[in-house]
Length: 237
Image (tube, rainbow, N blue to C red; front, side, top):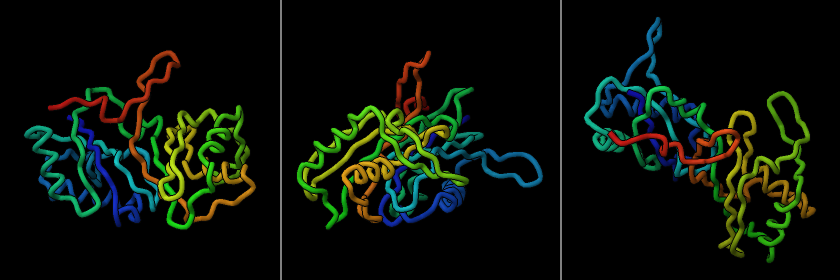
């Protein structure tokens, strides 16, 4: 049976990179006594698939991985066993079963929701929220997006699905839903950098505290987007 696990990554664990998170869960699954399935071949490994990797320094309340199990004693039993194998800063939030034919976590990602706050000393100027919303209201938002091989100009407006801003000073917060698929992955920092540039400023490197609130898949049909959290396509067992 294929199982989807939702977990949170907070505190000091935000400084742990994706490869180390993968290794951590491989060991945690063994410590928890989960009857995980292994691949065949010369070098068998746990059948495991993570959703969109989280950048180092970001926290999250909506990370996902899929595993395949050969036997189980129910979702709650598996959740408790895994949670006991966690360390401070890692928490199991839910365990659901996937129907046969469901795309794995990595292939399912369509969007991600983020909250963006400002570190002490980097609070935006008064009236920033109205200016950010006006910026978002533009028909085109051009940025230079870097890839591993090149840098190109692109319009990121179609990839920002929702954006709101509120608060002043230390209470300032931005919430946004952006494309997180392999074909259009947009980072919240890129959106904020574009806004700062439009203001005639440069965004300081460590100004933002970014949290991924959840990761979404698109269950819409015929081009009609319908985004739901990745665990919404699973069922209890």
